[in-house]
Image (cartoon, rainbow, N blue to C red):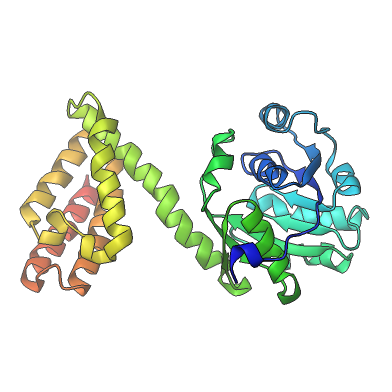
Length: 303
């Protein structure tokens, strides 16, 4: 179905429970689509200030009062806090029949909302596959952002329409696949930040004055190549089977950044396995390379 043909939800009163980085941004996006933020809850000083900045004139109230006035409630709390929050809201009678209850957790589908569903709520799981800063730039980044969508079949079109109104692209994720879906995103996005930060630290130790400038074009090209070509984009000493170079890398890391050795070895082994499986790494070179990786791991364990 063409996005312009998607059913547009009626204009809704929107509430936010949890003024972290995600909730205010989604509320702002819904506001731009014509919906009306009416209440927000936040606990920490940071969340209160964020709500005041991004949702000015929207009352800051306890969670139960958010549900009293909102037709659409965004539950944007940490994953581990979501089940108890839903149970508490349902047990205290805060949930109203016919109320759209939307959580943004990547880990969960709609089953985590079952206590609220039994109270008559309409459950939706809309997870934006985006990293958030807690600032106004997040609203702009939602344009073209994929959302992992899980909802009962009868609410699927409404869920997809809400995502499109926020500028996103809906991607249907089955309930049982949510943990795998979320693990995939964390593997790519969260670990990428760690890798880039480590790389910048090592370049600084090597005397590079502007590590970010050096890495920007390289990493941008590598990401583009990987998205276009997958494993065929692999380059570097591991993919080539340069066992001596890899051994030198590990030796230098042990001297200057021992905390980076375990990650380097793990990624090198995984890279070697994938390069070998896709015919990029010659088997005779792979044997020497994997031997070096095994030896360096053993050497490190003895120190």
